[in-house]
Figure: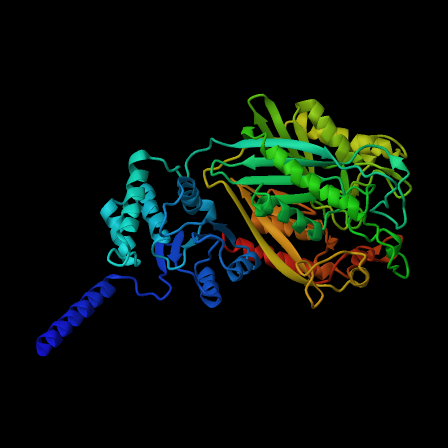
Length: 602
């Protein structure tokens, strides 16, 4: 009897072992379940450690990670943020039925060429990843069900280890998607866009410190209101892009991160798709802190120009404005208008180094214009140092004139304004114009260039995909004495998310692809020479200056200490002033390299 039991047990073990060997030979034996779905486009795996994540993303030039296990580990988030890889997370389970909308959205992202190459993963790369990619095989590649299920098994979706209800669920969802056609087509349609725009007054009360020129310049009243203006574009894939422009000299990343946190916690928008820019007018409250008594000699600890109560209010108004704008979304058509702003700006340092492209994004709906976004690089300095009245300068008048001409909400976003592109007044035909005449003349002239002339108009083409944002964090050595002291004394606020223990400023750059419109996100005042080089490198049509930060002047590294010979002045130190408002001589080169790295994944 015992001998018979031993033989039976031995036979059973041989059977199990043989079965195991048979199945193992039929399965993917890669330890992380890695596989190629479409070479150069879509890849799959289980959860990777940091070493494998780096190897795979570099080898296959991954642009997008889709995590089907909910929020990926912090390591993966940090790695993606540091390397300009966008991450989409879906909370799916291997044991319960996924939501149709999650399946639809995941397939849209994976199949959208603008996001590719894409890496899809869950924990093991078998069940959740297997389901989504089986659906991709059937719906977008024409595979039959049996072949798709066979591939699920190859990647360890094992029917004899998986409980029957789960296996039936996989088959049910797969068949339901095919029969009912409930999933969206990933590409091939230009319709389905929605957009909305709105605005909010952000004029401060009281007597704030004015930013932009000399310190200790206090407001004596209000010439015209300051505003926050918001444009939201929703693509057919469901992603929403929110662009906010503030009538401020800048809005630092310290504040931007707080806005993103509120946006995320309230479920208003994916905070990665929020862009906050500043017009850089020089007659508004100090949002950075350096125009109080601090920016005198020596620095004064009590001299911050920031009003924390006011800025907390601005942050809350941005959150409410984005939410309100999203609620107004309506069907829309997007059009690019290309013109020239020549004659309305000048580089007072090096005349030939200038970007005079005047780019406009016009958005119309069934009832007319929804929004007009104007992108032009120039310092709004119509009102000079002797002015003590709050004003939005010419951008405020420009948006009002466009709204009167076309309707809707107009938005101004600055461009390559750095070192030192200022308003040109010679074209106004007025000798010694007043501040009001400078602002009015610039606004009128630019409005005519956009509306009256015959600029190039192109409807946005979305055949290559819809919306993608790539960002990269870079660490810049803080070599500026004033900024060092300002942070040390608490005049300029910062956190561990904005400055490292080694006194490196964490700077964020980005690229937005909206169909065939590419926009660069530059966190400060970029000098046109380096900006035009990056524009050519990336193929961008627009550059948003002061985007998600204001880090000061971004000067070409090779020109940081540039000197030229002037016929009357002799040897001139070109950027003597700009160096006092720049983080480091290395800044220009580091930002250029960061954009080059982001575009290497194109």
